[in-house]
Image (cartoon, rainbow over all chains, first blue to last red; front, top):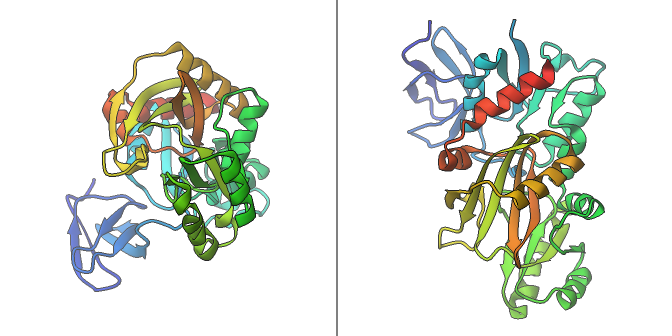
Length: 61
Length: 283
C-alpha cells in the first residue's frame, strides 16, 4: 500500500518536509533553502534525502 | 515473470518516471539505478547482476558511453549500444560516421586552437556557429554573426574552457530558426516535431523550451532517418535535423533523448513505444 504522503528532513537546513508519494531517484526542491534534493530511499513513509546539483556540469543529452 | 531493466541515470526526471510507470504493461520492471555508484569493471558487473538489461539514461555526455562500454564488456545487454552512444556523444565522430555513409551532415571545421579558429573563419565566414564537440541541450553553442566579435568569443573558449571543452567545431549557420526532432524507437520514427526558437534565443532546441508543432509523415525524412539508424543500429534516438536549400541535414543524434515536448506536441505515447521496444529486444 502506498502512503498518501511522505516525510523527510532537508539535510542542509533541517526543515521538515511532507510531500506527495515519490520514488527513489526523484528530486524535489527544499522550500526553505531551495536546494535540490534527491530521494535516496523510502522506508516506512520516510524519505532519506541527499543534496544534488540542479544540473551537472557535463549534462548534454 | 517481468524482466528487470536498470534505468541508469543520476536521477529520475519526468521521462524516467513515465518509463517506469509504463513498464508493467510490457511485462517489464524498470528500476532506477544511480549512475554514480556502479563501479563497473569487475567481472560480471556485480552492480547490474540483478538486471536483465540496462537502459542508459544518463544526461551526462561523459558517463553514458563509459557505462555502456563497461557494461557490455561484462556481458550486460545495453540500450543503446555502446558504439552508438559513443558516436552520439562526440559531434565530430557523428559527422564523420554520417559523411562515411553518404548522409548529409553539416559542413564543419575542427577547432582545437586559436590558429585553427582563424583558419576556420577564412573557410566558413560569418554567420557561423561555434559549438563544443562534447555537449548538448544547446549549451555553449554560439552564433557568431560578424567577424568583429569572433576573436572575443574565442577568448572565452581559451580562457574558461578546460581540456576537452576547448575542442570545438565551426559550422555554417543553417537552421534559420527551426529544427526538426525525430524520435526514433527501434528503426521507426514514432514522433516528429519542428522546434522554433521562442523569440528571445536564436537556438531552436528541444531542451530550451521552444515552440513545437507536430510534423506529418515525410518520405524524405523517413529515408534520412533510416540511413542514420543503419549506421548506429536500432535503438532509442532523438535525431535533430535542419532544412537547408530544400535538403535535410543531420545536426545531432541524442542517445538519451528527452521526449516530453515531442510527446506533448504529437500526442504519441513515447514511453509505451520505448518499453515495447525493450521487451522485443529482450524476448
